[in-house]
Image (cartoon, rainbow, N blue to C red):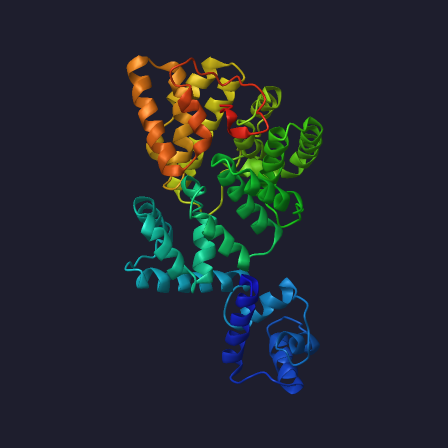
Length: 404
């Protein structure tokens, strides 16, 4: 049963409690229809018979119907009803886990830190979350831990997909799993996750960020395969779709172009990289999301690192260094610190003296061991030679060298 089905089942329970008895027959549905009508919502009794299983029905229900029933139980709409369910479940979960706070972002951040510090915590937390589907959804969607995508954390995404089957959820999970396979040099899983991404359509519910991730995965994969025809086809399709996401980019810290850039920096497509950074859609309207300030700060910091990498790859050292000098690694949110720090240090290596190069190599060695991002080992093998971001096309075995 998916999350939406569980929410609807809970809504049925709440309506039943408000109604005062089980809704089992047509007269009950007629009476409920009348009560909804008195609230200003005309929901046909036939619809209610389908909703409560009085007659067999396997289809879905309109937003109007769900909103009307949620209002009947005392909420503003169905979305507000679901938020209340989430808040209740989060409260129960964090109380059981030993904490108590209304700041669920802060509590989740503390859990992320504990997971980072203890591999066993990763397993125990996953087991505890299994009985809290809404908590699991909140945690994986709001706190995806890039640093751990090449390890056991993949199981979080796999279980997430058991309960979330819409296209946005698929792209969300498979795009992270693809990058984990790519950075850990696992071509079989890369093939699998790319196929899943490619066959998932960008439907109406897919937001700007995840539409960008779909294109990003496909572009990186086609480049890895040496299929320039496929790359150009996907790139052309991406440019057409980009126009649809301009409003989203204007409101977001991360633009559609930035999302694509996160994937293209691993390729030698410098012309396309240059186009993306020169035609980036700047944020013009403050983000009205519920993201806390520290998360927005982390997004801004990771963007600086991506720009530093991008400018370096196209040979613009001045702009690259400017972005690099503005980076504050401590602002990176827990769970993505190592992922972005690796990119930061690989670029910084070319701008520092011998003594600092030695420190950078040691930092990178530790990060690579912690994350299992073996993809970067080829950079480490070249640490005694001049390192350049201007790379050849990746060979069939993408582990033969590091294109960064």
